[in-house]
Image (cartoon, rainbow, N blue to C red; front, side):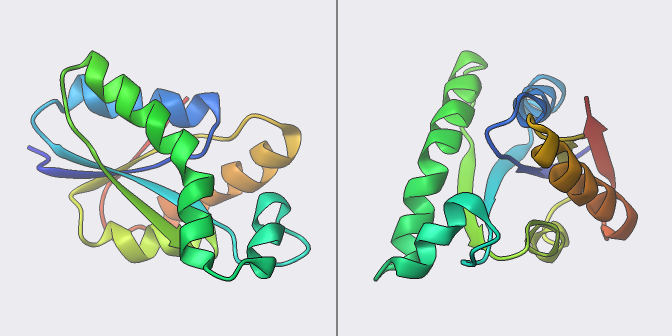
Length: 139
């Protein structure tokens, strides 16, 4: 039995499928939704603005809020509660650093746009190959 599940999420349909899978198949588990905001740099879209923020942690939390709101809505539909967590940095590395504290990782296979599919698909692959705990990849 899985007692603690980590569900990395972005705003993609596949991430939503991953949280739905975890909620439906593991209703007794403690589920933590992790949203990783890329390191501030000109190459990371929304994270670019983080470099200009006085409080990077607060700005990252604000960027994660829509993802967490959707995850909480889905959990409420199943009459369940979830925990949420924001990390900064490389998504695959951040997920792998947290994975050891869980019994499993449930991750979407890829993001929505072509760029997301290339990056997030690559992230799911890295997590799958390097995770210290079992990984379920949801499509």
